[in-house]
Figure 1 (cartoon, rainbow over the protein chains, first blue to last red):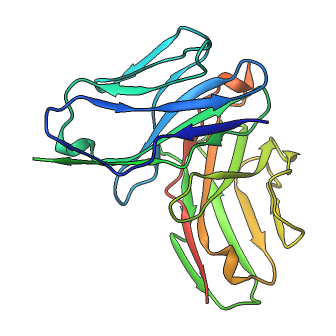
Figure 2 (cartoon, helix red, strand yellow):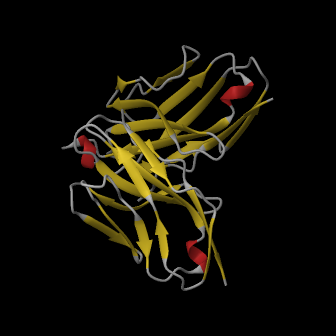
Length: 111
Length: 117
C-alpha cells in the first residue's frame, strides 16, 4: 500500500540554523511528492512538489529532491526564521486520486 | 482570486445529531476532495468528486457519512447520528482536475472543526 513516514517532532531550532525534516515513502508506481505547511491558525498550503524521480522542488528557501532509490523526499532549508514555525506535512499522490499524508512534523524556531 | 472556502468554521453538536459541512471550491476546479484530520495526525482521505459524481468514496468510514456535489461546484459533507469519534477538522480541497491527476496540485480550505459532545 501507499504510506508516508516523517520524522517525529517537535523539531526546535535557533534562528538561522539548518533544517532537515526527513520523509520516506512506500508506494506502488511513480507518485508525485509534496510538502504542505500549516501555519498556526491557518489552513494547509502547498510548499513545494516534485512529480518525477530526481526532480527538485523549491519555494521560499525550502528544497526537497525526489529520490527514487532511497524512496525519500527530505525537506531542507539553509537558514530558518521564526516565521517558519509551523507544522510540515509530507504527502504522496499516487496514480489514483487521494493524497496520502504523513503525520506531520512540528517545527519551532527560536529567536 | 478566491481560494477554497468552508462553512461553518466551527461546529459543535451533540451525539446523535445530524450535521452538514459545506465546501466552495476554487472557480473552474472540477476535482473536489474531502479529508479528515484528527488531532496530531495528517489528513486522511474521505471522498473525491470529478464533476458531479463521486469518483472514489473509499475513505468514508461508514454509511453515516455521505457527500454530494449536485451541480459540480459546491459540495456538502453530511454526517448522520454523529458520534464523539467523529470530532476532527474536516478539510476540503480542489484542483483543476484536468490532465494527469497525480500531478494536479490540491488547494485546501481552512477546514471545519467539528466537535461532538
